[in-house]
Image (cartoon, helix red, strand yellow):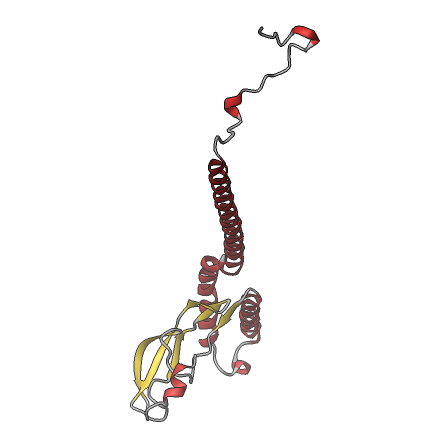
Length: 198
């Protein structure tokens, strides 16, 4: 006699579980295989989780490095443009007579103002991590210097920067613009240890 699930006061909404959905193994060996399969899936999911966490950490670290790099070097194009102003002020000052006492007092005030402006500009550049490369008397270093000419000078070792045409600058320790100048030749050979200085 077939029983009616609604007979005897059983609620009509009660779900009847389908035996096909339970995946009950038929044999004891099937159970062991199923446990092994689930353990392998678990290990695979743990591996995927660890890889995802590592990737997220790498993305975060790269983003922090990009932000730091942008903070340090984001002003590079602007700094290169400002260097032309510094160059022009430097040229104006180098054209001044060495003895300002012989200059008309009205012109002397203008010249003193140009000197003050040049000092202020250099101070502002240094505050923003832009430093001038010290070149005169230093050994030529292709990483920081660009040789525009060779100058015959036997009084200094060969390969010494003896004239600076355009000063070089570093931005946060990285080359912004190479210093351009004249390098000595004809003097005594420079020692190997001094040739790597900047």
